Length: 326
Ligand code: GTP
Ligand code: MG
Image (cartoon, rainbow, N blue to C red; front, side, top):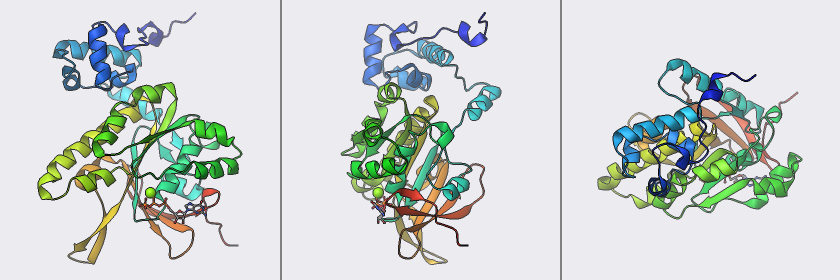
């Protein structure tokens, strides 16, 4: 007999089935990007107020959604339970995985930054393939959502990588949902409205390549910096919420700029300032190792892993380890 506590909780399948949400409210919520129970569970009272829902009712709706998917942030033991659910996705390189403590983790944001050609987009492509592998091969058995801001995505490259892993390239391509973002506002809009697509396609990896390019080119000058940072902050928080709600990995790429440095003459820094630095849980700096396919990955910040460096290479097959001598 089933007597588990979880099963006594109401399970809502659509947002309308939650008490307090009628057809009109449901329509307004959808317009705001809340299409699923999962995204409602991650909503804030203030966000729901935009749909004309008063705070007390908003609070009840959010709680109903949270209990429906067994999610709560209130108790520390629940939080620990969530941490236990964190899964890891392989990059294709054992060494790079090692640097990351076993691979890219779900529920948090991992940022790859580096200059032109350092391999950010190649890693992003590889992850879109790897996420489809079963857990025993380092995948998450799900699909990928690729938000492409610079027309970077190449299906042919996915085919190469899939073949190398002996996966059916057609199937692999079917499990990657591509969303092209034309402006920073469009980029935000796409992510804000992605919850239904994520759910319906069992998306377990969300890529934004590049996170910052549109923001950087549209918000020029000092006077627009505050507005840019506020939007980037909102965008990244939406990403964290989706990653947590769907136990998905979130991977963003970022460019660098060089700036004069008092002590070293010049230093290379990622775009996005404190907002991006603090919202990315794990940051990896990529650089070329002289000429050739070898790249250096440096773990710059992580909540619990030590800084370090590892090598990997980019080949026809995708992201691979550099063979060890002897
Ligand atoms: P930006 O987006 O321009 O900032 O650079 P990025 O960091 O995204 O660079 P990207 O990941 O696109 O890396 C490009 C590099 O990957 C190329 O210079 C090649 O060295 C390598 N690469 C890309 N495609 C292939 C391929 O099909 N075969 C091989 N062997 N290498 C490739
Ligand atoms: Mg790129």
